[in-house]
Image (cartoon, rainbow, N blue to C red):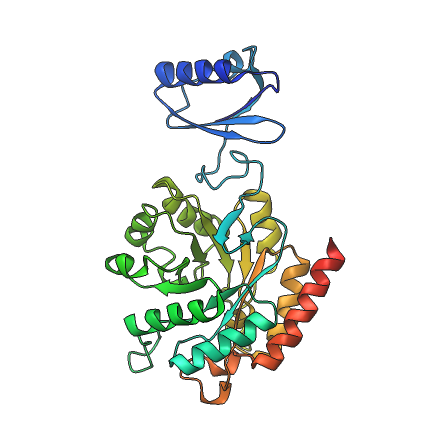
Length: 335
């Protein structure tokens, strides 16, 4: 249930009214104080609450029940966009366009530093790179693991770029203490035990949409994280599995405005994993920005033909520079 309080409602009245709801109906009351109004979100069994009685209270502007199973991720509970501060002046969800760029997999110190410097020069504000790599084949390169994390931190020190990298299991959380954004890959979107543990951290979480996940299932996974107290969730659309096999996945552009309507959480798009083809990254990135994405996550490698992972979808630094210029120009034109 959502209760919007009148603008004239004082802090004292708000507290008194919230306490009444908790005491009388055994519900949890979440408070969101916006610029123009204060919203109370009631979590728990609200079936016994008389909606007409609540609506008749002097401090209440409006009240309505929420049917969707995700509450904390729901825009009805939180009308204003969530803005996540990554640090170093980087914010996701504030109307700006942030680009996360870097190699699919960290391969060496020289490689990650070279790519980091190149993407920063082109306007990227966050460095991506895989230390732990989930691969379809058990014989494929699985990443440098802890060494890869160390190399990402060296690249961050060299460039000042915050880092985002993927976690594979809950037991690794301590290893990610100095990572700026923890990524949950598509295969782990419904690893609920991992999500619950990440919800106990205070780290921004980049939650990729599952290979065949519906939008509601995606938002429910975000709810798992938020239910444990961590509201710093960034949703990542990375394409879903369809009948089409020309591309690696099918990028669901419609998911961007849909999620923006349903949720207050920021949305970034991964055109690299969506297409699996480097020449498709540019048009898909442009489409994502036009559809309202808050950011992009793009794979960039200094030598794609010899990449240990996903070279076919990786851009060279020169290609990335071209794409970055175009999407930033588009973003400025849309303002």
